[in-house]
Length: 260
Length: 287
Image 1 (cartoon, rainbow over the protein chains, first blue to last red):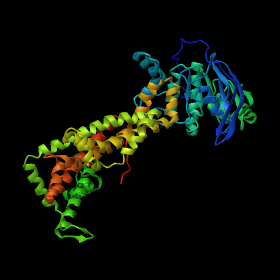
Image 2: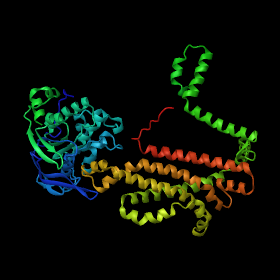
Image 3: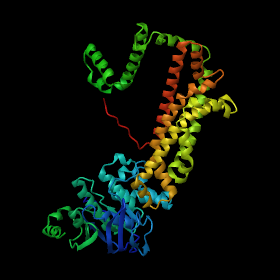
Image 4: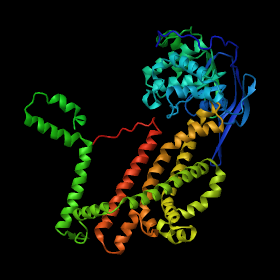
């Protein structure tokens, strides 16, 4: 995977888009008459092309925050702006990669990745080219006609990532996308993600509970605390890029790990 | 036979004929599925024949039951005296009833599964009608329809309609509960129409297919009931008529014939719908 050289399918498109600002987001769920404060006035400012990680234990509301940015759920207070547009509903400008395998079982790999473009009404020949290019980008060119049930977990998540990216979203939202994979595949996927990201320069918000994953991937990490979910700390990651899995053994990495 | 024995062909080269025969027999009985099924059928009819011949009587009484041999004779008689008019009449009634039930059941099922208002408006009366058995509809079928033929089709329709309707409603509701798949569509910018066409319908298809298979079987199930209304033709009519005239072998023949046609059409529906779902790979446990 590491040897793969990537050519950008979007080399022509270079307008800096993908700024995300989260303004005073609070979220209160009420369950059986009791109200639970999940998020308490969260503020984030993410620059175009940045890869930030939301790190925290389960139940800290990091996935809820991501779902709010995606527009799947409405916050109790506050708002989210993506490229100066307020988020009100889910939309194709915010790609989403789910924790669960979420390819549509009745579509082939190709059809799954093609789906967003089809919705946009992009002509067939163009779709063909774009999807083919993106599938090659993640090494799935040979599996274009396979159904999801015939793919491994890692392959399914790679297809999910390009399904989101092929629409050239302003921001890619990733909700613990590698949590269900085995350690080896997970490391491969992390490197692959960094590879793609360094090529496309899409803003990425990556939710994880894994400290090492957050340090390895992120430009910045927002550490969240539990009940109510708050940003406890913001850590800049000064590690050089491109990063490799071996970097996780460096003293610098260990230092950051302790800090987080 | 060779096609089901690819391995044994390779293995048996150069062995003495008796060993080869033994291995062939072994392969047939332990790996040939069609042979296994045939053996099961032969055993079924064989045991039935024996029970009739010995006049088995212990709680269940076989003394007056026609034996397979008598049924076979009745079947030969039936097929020698223009059987096709009976078979054709029955097949047409079942297929028309099933077709109407499929169209209405799937369409209403999707509406009820998708729109709250459709559920509120339609479900109460449908739930009220659902438990009514087909046989109870006979008097009303006579009153409601212009002729016996449409009445009979209505009764096979009743049999097929409710399983198809309920399965479709359930299937649509299940897929709407799958929040991740719906969100996948939403974050790709899908409109309601796209969610419906590319996510809900294919996702509901396995459930709908199950309803269609059960509905097909139920339409046959209701055939004898329906053909009580028949004047002259129909396999169900022959069965009912033989009962009225106390001629027992044709009853069993009619039952088996209905069973056979029902099994075949359910199989056809199962395979037809499976062809619509190439993504589904069934792998069952080996015995």
